Each structure stands twice: as C-alpha cells, then as structure tokens.
Length: 153
Image (cartoon, rainbow, N blue to C red; front, top):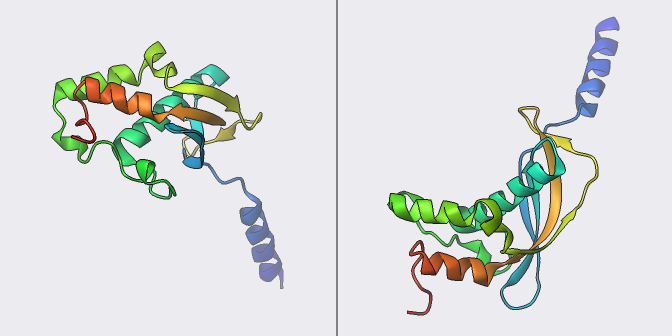
C-alpha cells in the first residue's frame, strides 16, 4: 500500500513538472501580397537579444527549411533547395542579410507575446514574438546577392 501511494505521488509530481521548450515558428496569416505574420521564439537573457534571435531564426527557417505546416505554398518549401550546394560566398551573403541592422528591414512589426520568458532544455531563457515579415523584399535581396535563383526566369 505504501509503494502504491509513493508511485502515485511520484507520477503526479512528474506530470506537473515544467517541460523545457524548444524554439518554434508558426505561420499565423498572410497579410497583403508579400507579407506574412509569424509567431516565433527567440533565445536570450534580455528582450532585445531574444528579439534578434527570433528574427534570425525566422529568416533562417524561411531560407533553409521552409515552414512545413504552412498553408501558404510560398513558405512551405525553403528558398534554398540544398544548403550543402551553396558556395561559401553565397552563405556569407545570406548571413550578411540575416545579421545586424540589415535584418531589421525585413520586419515591419514585432510584438512581444508572452511577458514571462520560458526555459529551453539547456536552461536558456526564451521569449515568444509575433512579427510581420516582408517576404518579397527578403527573397529579392537574396536573388540580387546570387544566393537563390531569380524566380520566374
């Protein structure tokens, strides 16, 4: 009887435990032509660090992985078919576009969703943001840099 009580208490405690989060991205809606609303997580101790990480994560997902559960075909497939086939100069160009102040031009709105940060599996703080992405501008800059082929040609 004591063992049964002990196992019930243990199972209850384990089911109530906080589960660490992993970084995620989700398509919320298509706004106007070329603009999409996303919800994305960013890691960082401060809000600005987490926001920068969320922006970089969103652009990286769009470029290299796509959003497999997206209902909009533009985002379902990645812009780059095979990351391993990119040259080092193409990767450097893509990284320049997704880094620092140049990255901010692809986002028209960024809003903090949860005021309380979550914890990742490694113990880092993670915060959720809702953002509007200018997909057409990002794709056009990648085309001009030679990272992706020009669409429609």
